[in-house]
Image 1 (cartoon, rainbow, N blue to C red):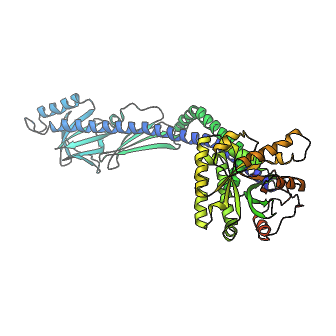
Image 2: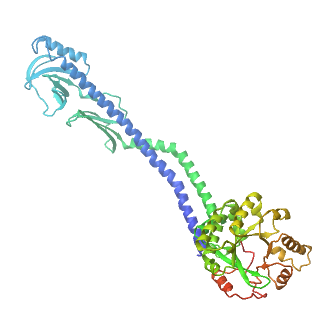
Image 3: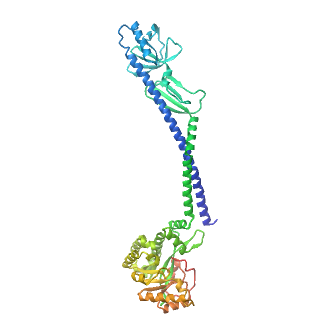
Length: 521
């Protein structure tokens, strides 16, 4: 499996994983959220029930205490007919009091039925509900000796309350409710028969009562199912949104621009150097720095293709910065030792609008101690479409000492009027016009007009794509100062260019054609 196949396989595998996540995650979150919401709602309902039961229990205790307090100072002796009548009236006035009695030393002397004078059967455990007031969960009425009642006693008097009164609230089906004293004595409970499975529990404890409400977990599951059906459209919408975003990412990642972003992030672009030859002497006087990109598949992407893609996606500035960094790193020592050499760097229209590349260049040149006239800057005619901005940028660069050349002259919207207004130092004749030299086409004379126009403006001239001795001879005869192309040398890696340049020899006019000159920036 090749590297590019592995890379694309990794991307597609990642997409499959992320796609699965986009489908599964919203459903899983909705599933979990629905359960949590259903459980929270059911727990809130149980909490309201235990609060109601606690409120009910406190109401009963407070009303019983108030009734007993009213019996503390009888008009006559204890257990007199009047006292018994008052106790009987208390059972009538407070509907949940079953019986009131008076006791002393565990001896029941009388109750709301009359005189008794019988030993009391009291539960040994009690809960204090106020000064001198005790709550017992197990008391036994003489009228119903087999029935366990709840006793509230104080100042010698007691009142019996039926346990069911403490759970006499509206309780939904399937809900269990149990009330006990704080001491742990069971008072009453309401529980669905035959349901002994796992239950959701909510408890309440306040120092007097301990209350527990329960609900079968099956009921929570039913509520969660309803919630999940309600959440299904939202989960599906989230999945579709995630899949849409993933499709966009996959399209960008597998596109040429996406792969170029990765190459820039990994600094995989290479810089080669096309020697620039003085046509009069045949000596190398510098080079043009060209960006190269080898696709992970192994094929080289031509600069015309990937630079156009970079311009469409706002990446060309990053390419320019990386080219500048490579040039200064590769050629800094050579330029310092040979001040007559120069390297040309291409600036795009976006580099005119954004000064990031220019600031990077100024910073690195100052750091490495290079002269500005050793870095020539080439701009295509597209960079001059905003004439005012281009004029200001070029003026600043020339003021710093850089030489400015118009690249690919004649292929854009060339005109003498705008050429006269721009502060440039020279122009480069495009290869398409150099190819016309000595041809039989009527267009072959265009190059003569370009040369004459440049001379009239005092501009230096560089001819691109010189491939034959005949072309070199013609250009030299017409006064063109510099040339570059296959005739002299192919574009060279940094170390090869250093060897080529340091040989300081006159280049043969029968050079090796080398590789495609069209792959340039």
